Amino acid sequence: MPEPFLSKLYIPPTPSFYSNMSQSLGEEKKATVIIRKLERVIEKEQGLESGIVTFHVVSEQIDPKKFSSKDCFRVVLPLPDEQSVSIWATPIHFEERAVVLLGTTDPMTPSAWKTLEENQKQIHAQSLVKIFVGHSASSDLFSLGMMLFRTLLVNDTQGMEQVNAKIQPLISRLKPMLQGLSFAQKKDRTILLRRIRIYMKEEMKGFSHQAVLYKQGDRHAVGKLATLDPLWHDILTLGLRMVTSIPEFSFCGNKNDDNDLPLMQALSETRRLAEQVKIELFGSRQRNNEILLACDQVRQQRTMEHQDAV
Image (cartoon, rainbow, N blue to C red):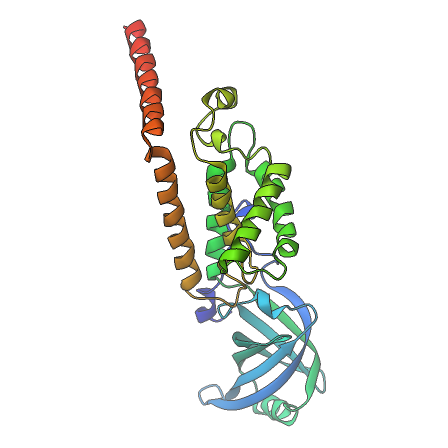
């Protein structure tokens, strides 16, 4: 692999549920390749030739929405007389059913170059494509979303494996829930949040906000001090918008959204919800008194433990 491509590669974190990478590194697929432009580059020192190529890749095994401009493609085109040419390329445009790539061929002999030129207008239906996923904004957002779920939902009764097992069915249900609705529209957003809250209350009862601060034996005794249910579900919805790639809902509607804007939007929404949590915890005299009382109880308990130790 050429050095410029190495810096783009995405190495998935472990465990695997912190990554949205759905295919193995360098997974091979069959595709049809159509060359749109071919420009020769002569390498005088070695007596070889190479070319800059613009071409379309079409395959039922390749969904353009799942790739970004940082991904790397290794394409092998079959030529007559059992010859072939290899190209390293990156996407420059995404169409509904095709990826447009720009790349450079491996150095080849002048005779091999002549064969490529003579066949450039042919449809190369038996081409092989290896895809090396690059680091993208959706990768960062997915990891951040799963870290948010880990921070809020892992407790003394469930680990990350159990949390992930409950999150995945909800993710698969999101698209039907969102059909015809846009999270950007206030009316639609209200409908979406209501549907998500209903699902969480019915199917994800183990996801309690009391479990963030309290052990299992203490949760019922303390009541609902942490946050109100609607805000809690808004925070979990924030995580869902990070770990999915659903147009009109997710921060990154698809992997083609490869810029800083989705991450900036996610961080802005995180800060807004953090302010809401602060208001819920400290914004009323009653809650302030409850928190002060809890602090006093902890301080008294620690004082008694210290005196007993002395």
